[in-house]
Image 1 (cartoon, rainbow, N blue to C red):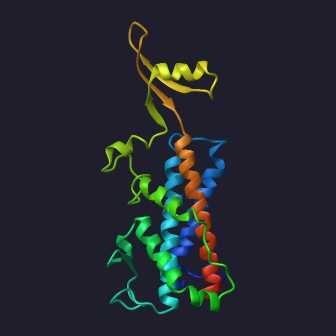
Image 2 (image 1 turned 90 degrees about the vertical axis):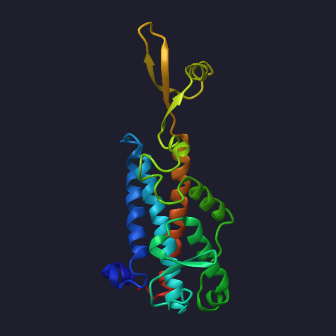
Image 3 (image 1 turned 60 degrees about the vertical axis):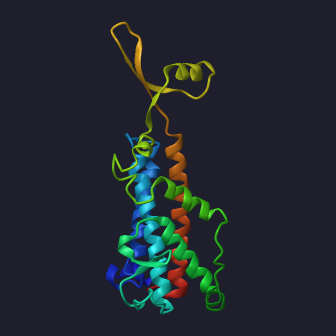
Length: 236
């Protein structure tokens, strides 16, 4: 496509989609090497890259719709600073990082201009029924694009879920071993009498689930972006 050969500022969507592609590609590269060369807490940068790609894809789609169909952002013309409709208020796009308001605006545009899309494109623009729940799951984990970027946020309880290394119960860990469940990777702190004082275990089940959801949604929006560029901007 033409936009792949042009500087970002020459893209129809000001480069949002292309930069989203770069974040997704970087996440894919890290994810593909994770099993062979794992590093401590590597799920955090991978998750952040996917999550940021999703945010940029949504912003790209909003900009393409408004510029292509000359839809104003409230009182701001389509050629002006991009904004997002959050409830009843138009907010500058650069101040919006939550996926839910972006996704709601995204859905509104597709629904409100379904007839135009049906008449002027050759694409089936339907999305998986589960997409809304996937977005909600991601938003529940990281509503402000800070959870995967920083060790601490304003939500101390949620921060405890960030690390794949968790404080654990020594007795429960022994029970898992005796039941011949999956191997337990543990770190034990013992006192002078060899009694266990603290126990920690490595469990990356949740982090793999999050990455799976993020990767799936990022791929879906990547495909959506490619089709929008082809169908609505002539590849620009």
